Length: 446
Image (cartoon, rainbow, N blue to C red; front, side, top):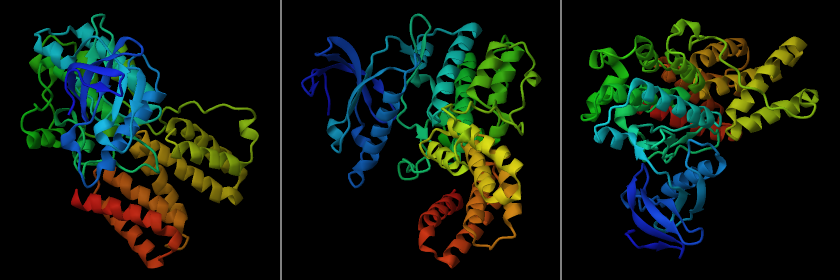
């Protein structure tokens, strides 16, 4: 257990606890080498399961990796880390930010003006645009994780429960426990379903609602009641609790609190634009359920489009598996169009690219668009054998998307896919069979 005066690796002298994050305590420390103040984060001992200590270390490593690769003025700079198999010695060292979190600001009795709240929100959206492009989902946006300096500069803190969309990444949850803070959780997070960028936007809207009214949308005392509220009840209008709020700002926040993710702003960038132009009608922006979501820019490179099709497909797949969804998506989209123009003899490659594009859409929060695309692809593949691998992969994702959108028919789809895989019993299908089994188990228990 750390205490004042404790020195880590003969370098970082602890000088007082600053606060508690999702995974560990954060301490003010003096770096003897650089001769400056830093913030040091350790691991909560009570979170450690002695039977599975590697889970906490893996999550701590993930947070270190994320901080090390980011350079953004709204995220504390990563300085150093010691992350190994001994949790008592693990720590992260970050830039020490002078300021107060929004919980402390509210406790001091300072009520932010509407303009100040919009400024805070715009800066948070800028951070989320940066992290969602990876895409990394914060999953725990709340006032305590938002720091405000004396000059009203905003820092987003604590990526300890962040989720990275990587196909090869194990879900780091604490024995099926929902991660996050109940008062600010999106409906899909409360239900244990897949989170996506729009989940963070819902949490941000909860924070803005509280900054304007003094309370979160559904309170923060009875966890079960709060979760029910997120899932089923419309929140009280902001204007009922703060009559002076502008109708345009209220409309932006209430839109982001929509139960269905597809009814919320499509991206953090769109959310920011709505905040920056509060007197423009929301209809001036493309609806979140638009069949043509904004397409990120494709990565450029020498003679990229002249590469063989097989190379381009493999490259897009590699980008996706590395978690660079925003980079993989336009590559898949262009390949889908190019292969369609080449004729039916290229159907197989086109089908795989359509599948890849839909997976990108799902991971970036465009579930309805992805479901429409994959349902059409599944219909075209029905002439194949019922245990065709591509058909089963497509149907698996259709089942997951149905569940994402609250349609319990997704369970039936997963059951049929699982049955076909177990009947075929092909050794090369062992990984996808296990994945379908886990998804079916989660959906059934949920």
